[in-house]
Length: 350
Ligand code: TXA
Ligand code: MG
Image 1 (spheres, rainbow, N blue to C red):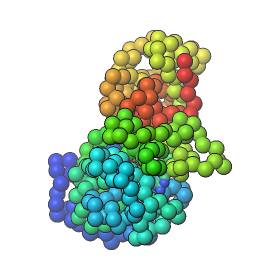
Image 2: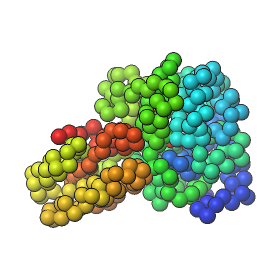
Image 3: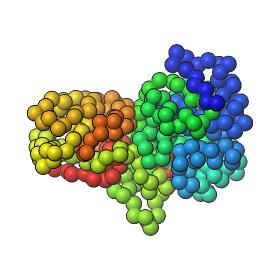
């Protein structure tokens, strides 16, 4: 039987101990992190890790991130950590940064999907930290959503799709950041960004390291192409309807581009996922529903809203949806990465 644990008003230590003991013994638990909700299990236990793949219907070639709460655990899960990797940890842990490291021996091979590397992250969310600390084992946890669907930033968004498949759901309210962690791999002096997130390229260069963006952040990898991160090959964040991004750094051009699509499709029910500033611009079109994703100048709010809004798009029974874009700078890089993938790389740039 699944149990829902409400930690909105703070951590209940007794309950936390119960869940931590269960997770150590093989249970699967949905828990909040500062980025998105995770679906976690004991990273040292094959059977438990297998349950995550089944619950998410996750392809067996897409490795999981291991979550730790202290440096002793780091020694356990990874080895040969370089000075630049230590510098990243010192500056950005605990926090929304996953570092791909040489894998330690104790971690289940299922977690890494047979790779000799492992993604490691020390989250800053206090419920996540308390859970890992109390369970005394590293916790393997991908985002808590069925594979291919948008990640979960609130329990109400994901409970129905995961409730039959997990032992506990810990509700910690809406997640702070709303987008998954930045995933990086360090090669000599260069930090390669495999997935952009709230730790931005600008944050990383500010501590004296070079940054390189992976070439697949905004383009689809071919089936036969070798990629640095298996997740790049899988369909992601997709609403169930055709979704197109229209973007220009000139607001007028973007507006006219969107109007053109609406006028070419007057017999279709269209949803626009756009910015607060534009919410009244399409009032003249009776076939358009506007979903407000937040003020264009406040990327933090937009980041928080993206996944809930992508899920909402499906509830309007639309024929087509159009998404507005932002500049690929700072947090805007991560926002555009998620939106571009949600659109299946269908982007009209004007
Ligand atoms: O913020 C987050 O990272 C959330 C929370 C729960 O911590 N987790 C998350 O996990 O987003 P997931 O599984 O949805 O995304 C992990 C990404 C995938 O794209 C996967 O391919 C990549 O990290 N990854 C994991 N291990 C890897 C490895 N050894 N080498 C390259 N990429 C790896
Ligand atoms: Mg995910």
